[in-house]
Length: 134
Image 1 (tube, rainbow, N blue to C red):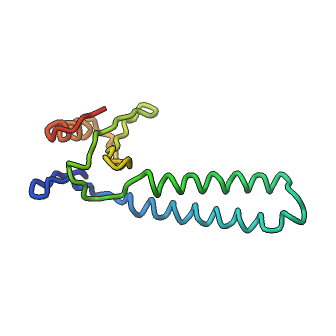
Image 2 (cartoon, rainbow, N blue to C red):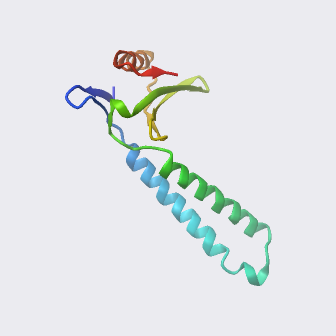
Image 3 (tube, one colour):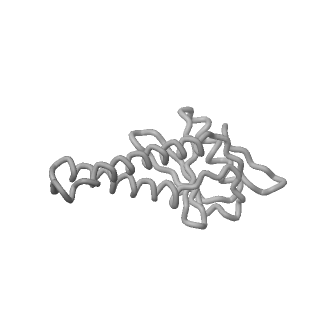
């Protein structure tokens, strides 16, 4: 399992590569936004057409998702217990996904496992630590 409890620091250590994944997503979104801006530069001459409206939509979607990744998601690998509000569980297409909801309003995605034993071990760990599971 990728999640370990550090008793000395009273924190949870999550070992996954979510930081690099989010960084790559932010770069792709930034490039998409840049392409959208560059394609809209000459619209004052030709007016708005279908392609320009498409690029405006892509630009808005890229900026909203970039904001969501930057300000609403956390990539912290060491999370002290006092910062964790609860463990959120959701089921999407029959697969359980977990995320830690922090007191600062951000959430930290936890890598889900395909094995039921790992899911139960994760729930037991947070139950033993006194963190609510919702």
